[in-house]
Image 1 (cartoon, rainbow over the protein chains, first blue to last red):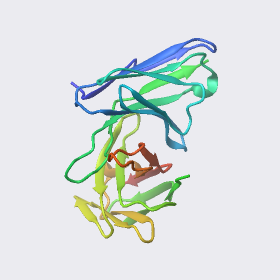
Image 2: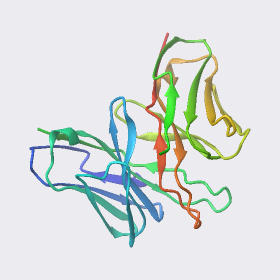
Image 3: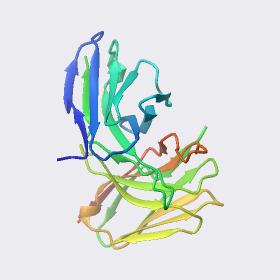
Image 4: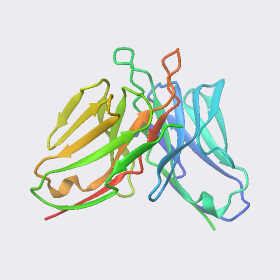
Length: 116
Length: 116
């Protein structure tokens, strides 16, 4: 089983609908992230959370909201989806390595969202 | 604002050849990450570079970091078809006193095609 699990993996929806993408992890990491990937643009950070009480906006948070329900769960919501939110969404986790002090990210398999 | 630029963005090369992908970034950082992504798949961590002059090698791939020049390179030696993928470099953002960083800022990726 994957350490970082995203659901759904694929979703097609219509403009104006509310959509939630869910992420759960078994890595025991405190830090969780949502990224969006668009062709030719790389990955852009939407929101990140250092623990259940600490949620922060990333580079492109407009139109999105998040909820950290537990250490292992971090969900991304689109309150009213629009076509330019069509993208591949990745959840990621990290834990500071106390020896090397790195913030390496571990990614889920991605959720492909299409908004018609 | 942290900017990460990769070049080239697209590279088609023949098996057996050598080539280098460049990653420039706009702010001081001594932590740089390289990821590989196969089509439709998640991102897989390749290298974590933690200090100026760091060099890491795995098979036909070698990554290096020059923090003074704000430059990392990913060198491919005697390319083989299986290395065809998109390669991303990523740099940490703000590092907080508690050791956390607000996620990674990614380059746009280098789409590498290696032809037999």
